[in-house]
Amino acid sequence: MRTGVLCHVGKWGRRILKRTLFRGARGKRVVDSRELAALSARVNELESLTRTLAEKCADLDLSVAISEWSVDALWEAVRGSRRTTAATHEGTHTTTEGEAPSPDLPKKETLN
Image (cartoon, rainbow, N blue to C red):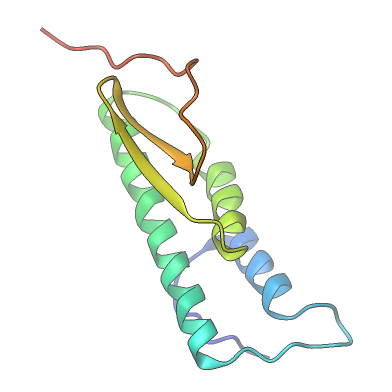
């Protein structure tokens, strides 16, 4: 059965979506259009965040495993966890709602 989610989420993202939308092989859960639209919007938002992160890392000459981060973040988004961005004087940190930024994060260096 096709889900109708028209966005590129990669192989693991599709597996997670499929597992979430259809709980188990025998008792398939039918997803209504509103729930599917909300899920699709979350996936699109996640892809946008992933692209932004990749661009920022490229600007800073950093190398990160975007694919692993994407799978974890997609799983959180599908499960209903919202991500918020907390801006501090040291830089911008993305944290889970209600969670304070870690004090171990490196401080943003200024270029003179």
